[in-house]
Length: 129
Image 1 (cartoon, rainbow, N blue to C red):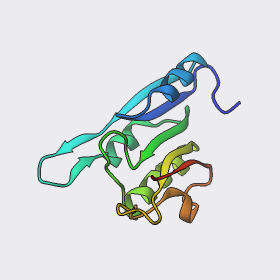
Image 2 (cartoon, rainbow, N blue to C red):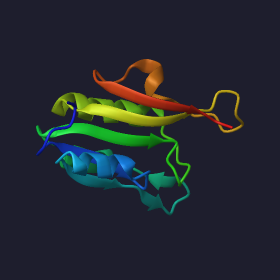
Image 3 (cartoon, rainbow, N blue to C red):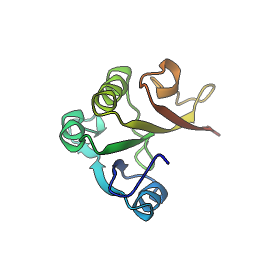
Image 4 (tube, rainbow, N blue to C red):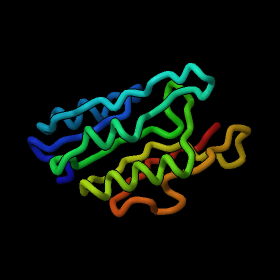
């Protein structure tokens, strides 16, 4: 199993909460990696230094939502590479819940799935409508 009792999971919040409940139901400890509003016009911020402080050798999964629901915030290549590096350092999987926006008027700047950033990626992709 990917998640065992006493494992650690980090979930980007806000987000769909099914993963949080599933991981807790499997006996994992969950921590919320909260988006913070950026009042200087950049939308929302997910602080990579905060994520780095949250993870440990017990961290099995880092879950992100890209673009974030409900904020709509998207992440650039450097940010995605940062998440991948943190996951690699602690040995965690990355679950990236992504929307395929190709052909949409709101295309993503970068996608986790495109480059194979982490050694243990899982990507859920849905088509933008």
